[in-house]
Length: 404
Image 1 (cartoon, rainbow, N blue to C red):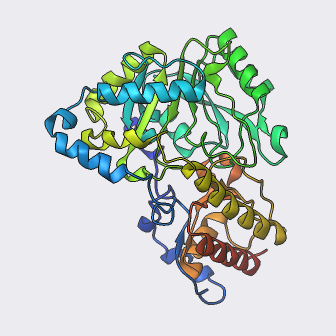
Image 2: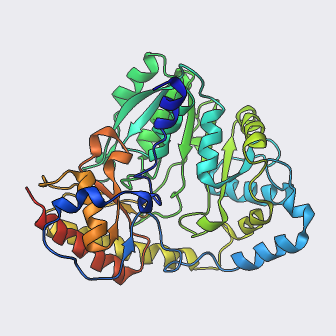
Image 3: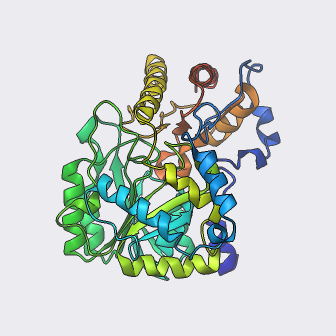
C-alpha cells in the first residue's frame, strides 16, 4: 500500500453514520441465532428530523434566500455579510466574548466542513495533535489525513457529573512532548459528557502556557439537561491565543439537511479556513445560509420544549439499559447514549450488523470513536419516543440472545 492509499484508508467510512447501507451483511448470516424481531425500523446513527422537525420558519427564510437570487447564491467565501453580522451578535451573547463578524467568523458546509477547514488550517506533516478518546469519529481520521500524528488523551466518562472529564495529566504530558494542536468536543460525542468549569479553566491555562492551538466542537452546547451548566473555553481569561470554536444548527435545531456550520475565533486561522474553503466548496450553499436567520431566534419556549422531549427519551433509554444490567453513563447533554456491551459470542462489529438484520435497528460501533471503545455502541436518541424505546428493547433482547 503506497502513501496515498494509506492516507485514504485512514478515512474508511464503512461503519460511519449513514454509510451502514453499503455494508455487506452476507458474512454474518452464519452467526445468526434465532429469528427476526418485529418492530418499526429505527436508525440510531443519526437524528430523525421527521420526529423532531427543523426550527419554525426555516423553510420560509430559505425561500427568501432563493428569491434573493444571485445576491444570495454568490456570497463571499466566508458567507453573506448580513447573516454573519447577525450570527456574530448571537454568538457573542451566547459565549460571553465578542465575535467580530468581519474577521472572526466563517459560515461552512456543516460543522463537519468547519472541522475539516479548522484542522486543515493548523495541521501539516508531522504536527502532533492531542485527540481525546473517545471523541468524534472524524477527529482522528482528519489528523491522519493531513499528515499529523495523533497523541491520545483519555476521557473518563463512566463516573458521575464532574467525576468525568479529560485526563489532564496526560494532556500536559502531551503538550510537554511537543503537541501543537488540541481538538475535542464538549458536550462530548459520543458520551454526552460536559467538561466542567475547572477542566475548561485548566485546558485554557495549559494550552496558553504551551502555545497550543485549540479546536473545540460545541455542537450540542445548547442541548443541556437537568440544569447542567456550560463553560465556553473562549470566555476564559486564559483562553489560548489560537482558538477556533465550532458550532451549528444541524442537531438540536434539526437543520442538518441545510448543511450549515460556523467556526469563529482567531482571525488569522479564520483567514486560512476561508482560503481552504475557496478551493474545496467556494462557500456554504448560498441559499441555505439564509436558514441561519432562525438560529438563536426560535419562538419563545421552543428550545425548552425540545430539550424536555429529548431528556424524556434519554431517561427512558438509560433506565432500560440499566434495568438490563448494561453499563451506560447518563448523558449530561446532546442526543447520544453510549452503552457498553457485555461479552458476546460474536464480535461487536458482527453484533452491530446482526442488529440491522434481525432487529431492524442501526447503531454506530464504538470503535469509530476510539480504539479502546469497540465494546460500546452509540445511539442517537433524537428519534420518535415510542419507536426509540421499542428499538432499545430489541437491542436488549439481542444482547441477551448473543451473550457469551
